[in-house]
Image 1: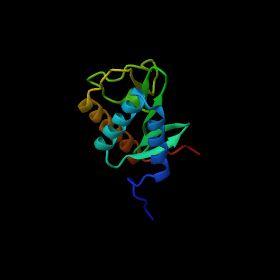
Image 2 (image 1 turned 135 degrees about the vertical axis):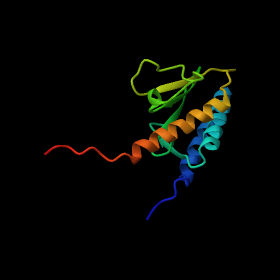
Image 3 (image 1 turned 90 degrees about the vertical axis):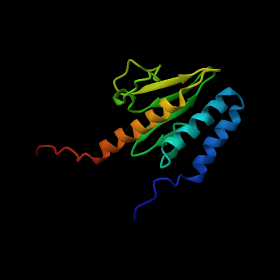
Amino acid sequence: MKKPAASPDPSVSDLISNRIAELDDWRGETLSRMRKLIQVADPAVVEEWKWGTPVWSHDGILCTGETYKKVVKLTFAKGASLKDPTHLFNSSLEGNVRRAIDIHEGEEVNESAFKTLIREAVTFNSSLKSKPAKKTKP
């Protein structure tokens, strides 16, 4: 039986909403705004709660939404493989796999470019899922 992709566990959604509410400052507002953009960019996104932080997935992790004292960090699991022509990625640039967007108080993210980046991550994850597994030699 195939489970619907866009039916997140309500308790997970509540955990994320509670995190946003408990921040009660610009970080909560920022995380809430980015969450909405992710949901608009990919209506089939699945919200998860891993490592004590919100995670958005579609055929694998798209990004996490971490909050720190001075930054909201959106870490894209496969960010190094994504096209980023508007240079949204501004953190974790030295790694071979991940890339992140650090958002400081008062900063705005280009919404159109961010939604395009989310769709790019979905396309990338889906392309990995559709590839057959490599066979190992006996």
